[in-house]
Length: 434
Ligand SMILES: [Zn+2]
Image (tube, rainbow, N blue to C red; front, side, top):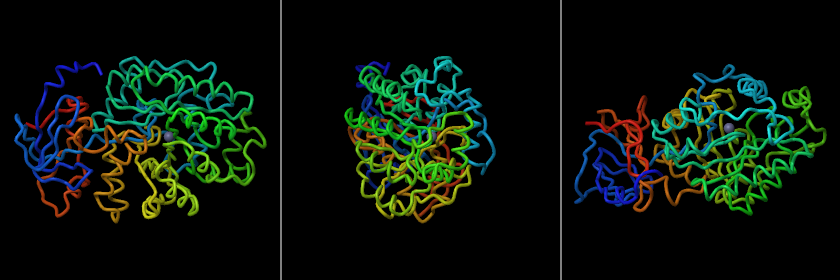
């Protein structure tokens, strides 16, 4: 962070709101949050601290956690393709839109792909970071590709876990892909954010590379994000080496016959992914009952990252969110990218869950978008809830004038929006209500 520590630490103030949602405990009516420098100094129902800024009819939440996104697509005004189309078809449009067709090749290095100009003020990543902060998102699980730059993340100051994407179906190029992963993980300490790796998905990663990357991440205690059980096309490829993904890959010369053993299931990957301390099962739309039970059994290590509006965009069958939670599985929320979502608004994802899974209740839904996301990424010691000592990352959400028996209903009703975002004790987006 660029801010002066000494100046920040001398800065002590209290925010009061109609409701404070600590997530670590029940909502506090007329609650307060006291901030000292970059951290939370106190959370409660009363305060003797001064000065007190009464924010009025707002909610104070922990900064929201978007556990899965690809900010490189943040310049898209609307999702690619059309709602409900086949997933393999959408993937081909994504690669075409970015000139990334070489990337969904048998390579981890994407030779010939020009690095995106990530440091330009209008770069998609810069736009995506600004949009995230404006939406109250202070922690992201970002998938980074060739040419990614830490500069925009450092400038934004956002808490990022940066997963290096690996795409490689060719056995011959596995060492090259592993070298990329190793280099990325080694850079962690100097870059100031958590580094992870993301073997992209079963249809773009050779099983041997997946096994080796998981072992590498386990040795580095690094998180792993893996798109899994997202579409019927994917399951068909795993089961029988046929279908739209096979045809897509074969037509481009990327398919490696026999690379994926016939009869492979998502469970085969889950068992390996559970070797790492934090494994993110991105989507998990089609996990069967045995796989749901396994994810629940491994809840300390595995999290399903449900991307509600992206899931809806593809018209997939209903997500097993409720079954997963009932089984005790750990679930977080993500937006995925603007290639399949209209925006990066995590509160809108929570609102979507509230309207489509009302039986879950507001408390559980707010947890999904905050503390559960932090736990999925392994950063829950510093963020995800309003607890003394954690970073002062806050989302300030405007509330309606109406009353509600459950204050969560005020928060998750239609058209609520973030009006200001605090990151490490400073306002970085929006403005306080006067
Ligand atoms: Zn994704």
